Length: 71
Image (cartoon, rainbow, N blue to C red; front, side, top):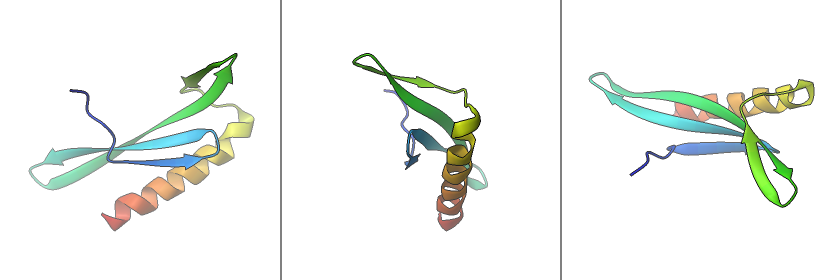
């Protein structure tokens, strides 16, 4: 069974996935970012970001940071 993120933040076409790892000192969180785009009829994703994506990544990172602090 594949592990799923504990939370996701979506800002336009950018998604921040928050992953939880249990440690002896409690939960630790890591965040990965993906950009989704449509190619023909198929949805694809990339982990590479262009100039126009960077503000979206920053906003998603800020929201992910806030969510983690609330936990």
